[in-house]
View 1 (cartoon, one colour):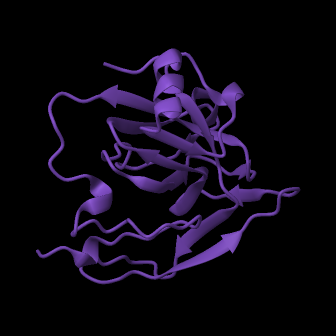
View 2 (spheres, rainbow, N blue to C red):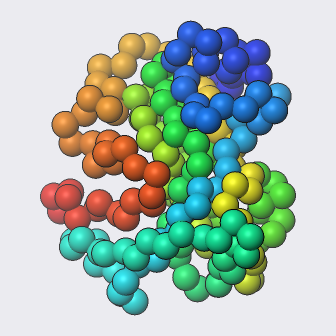
Length: 179
């Protein structure tokens, strides 16, 4: 089941959902709107290798001028909001207004884990050049109820690769897997 606005508000009051900064006007009927943070990153190499650590270059967007995203480039972005989810499964989806600009905000990583505590890294691609700005609405978090108990929360999982708190995009840590 998806949480409604009243349920999300109640879970925030209970502390099982944390959104910082929190703005009541961002609470939708069954979601919470998140915004594009001020940092973007691109990979340094033209060919990425899943078995090695692919380095990124991070840069800060101008609030006034924004930044023009180009097709054919994968941009890593980040949500302005820091979130914690302790009793629900969070899903991050793009806003329809963002999709209508030809912006995809995640390639495959829309589902979060119970216990995820961080800013969300976005895997942004565009179908045509588009100027984006820090602070613009970029996505919405949807929370699903759990059935059953959680054995290991993400923030306590020893193999979790994305626990280090940061407001900057984080590159793929696939290279830490054994394969």
